[in-house]
Image 1 (cartoon, one colour):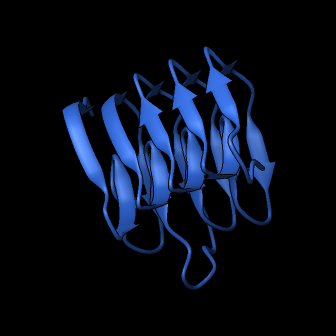
Image 2 (cartoon, one colour; image 1 turned 180 degrees about the vertical axis):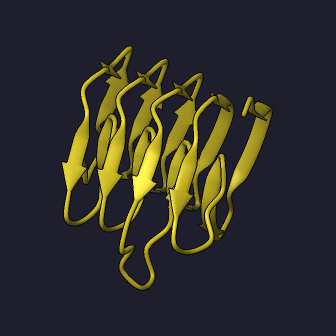
Length: 130
């Protein structure tokens, strides 16, 4: 978790992430963070909010990232979001990201970002390849 001015630059994950709560390939929760040039190739199997890169970002920048790890979210908690890149985003910039995986859960989900509030700004290419 990151709460103030953290930077994740050229980080990657290739291992399986398993949690009864939220989880993701790079950072579970990030606020006022800079996430760039990161990727996840590991499977994510969580019971709460989940994303290939992050389960939740607020007031953050996420760019040039990709996820190819499948996301399986069983028994998702009420109010949890599941997305190929980010589960939940608020007041954040997301740019030049792609997803090439399977996202599955028992609720609504999105291949890129499941739920967004506030000023979410998309720039460049956001692409789902699956």
